[in-house]
Image (cartoon, rainbow, N blue to C red):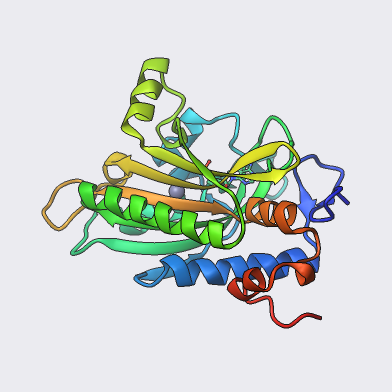
Length: 275
Ligand code: AMP
Ligand code: ZN
């Protein structure tokens, strides 16, 4: 068990078991996020931890982040082991774009996705997992509205995190969904503020992004041929939360026994009466 008692180590770095009290908090966070951001959802989906390899290839993830992608090998019949048609899901929103591929949306669309994600991270410091859970809200529609949706959400989320007792800061980050790119392209993306992270302390001296707001411009609209009601390639944005990091930040702030967290925080996460 880690020093803070939250995540239970396994022999594989970055892979943990979750005790019941952590699950209770994850559940409470999920419900609270639905209340905060999920009032206007067309769909609310849960994805399995794998996704069609063809989708990840269409999105270009395998070229931008070959080192993070977990591939699946299977052996059919008496044949040789071969790469399967699936890969491990690296982020929740990849399962959304194919739902609208080659279509024209009649109005802006907002969805929620709960995902178990895998990334072959190079280190396993506090809060950097290889298998972790992500909640995403995805907004698909015209560009200016994407940006204002994202920024409205980010400010609501910061207020919510403050109410939960967490001290946060925001940082403009360079951007995974466009790939590694050249330094110049990365710099341009930073200047355009396409990816904004909300950072919190998740362990002693360890600050991590607990949420990220991404404006993809027309990247996924183009790759998946999604059009908006005016017939233009659609833009998209997503807001992603890392459940384990949120739990770690709460435990770092309020202690490892959720029964002893402040009443207000317990109420916000509907943790129920003290056991
Ligand atoms: P990203 O797609 O990198 O912006 O990730 C979305 C959110 O998932 C981040 O804001 C984190 O809260 C969470 N996350 C990303 N990578 C990890 C990881 N290796 N371990 C735990 N949570 C992560
Ligand atoms: Zn996303």
